[in-house]
Length: 116
Length: 118
Image (tube, rainbow over all chains, first blue to last red; front, side, top):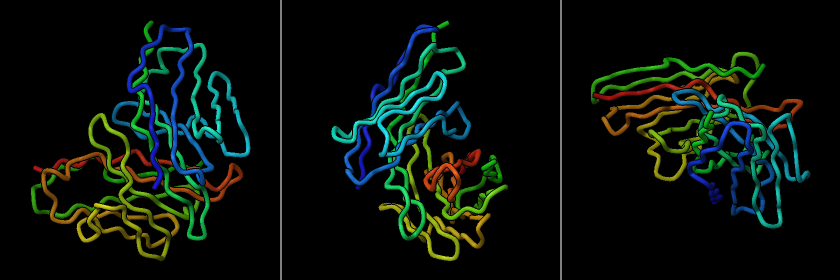
């Protein structure tokens, strides 16, 4: 099955600087890669996702890059703010199947702390 | 749009009792619903995948007779933890997905249920 590795496990960044979180996956059939932000005790919230037909996607201060050949994808947060502090999870999926939506395999998470 | 609710948000029960958790998609019909378990400071671990009207597919190591999943409609799935024990204490989160203009893969998560078994 799919295996998703995520690094680093913790990351501290000065407010205003950029943060980068990296993930690798093992299943070459995976074609959907979302990123979730989870605050303590709350639900994971989708912040950005990318499908395998593109190499980069940007939404304001957040961007995701995908390298299908190397099987890795990264989350980039620029101009970080204190409210960006949370745990971030990457995930990978094969997308649709004949039975419905394929499951997500999550990375181990990165605890991001923005230092004011 | 794409709101998923979960009930209850918190439950404390005695060892040996059963607990039912409901997951509802409020403003869309969910093709597929997923149940996850999350222990403190850990990632989300998928327990099972269910499609409306069919039996759930359980992940390896998850006891299907202990964690009963029913997906009776396109907007409701339930997880019943039977004969709960302290080691079942965890944060249980459901998610729902459907075909939308964004694509067919997006999962939207419920707020989670914190289960404490005494």
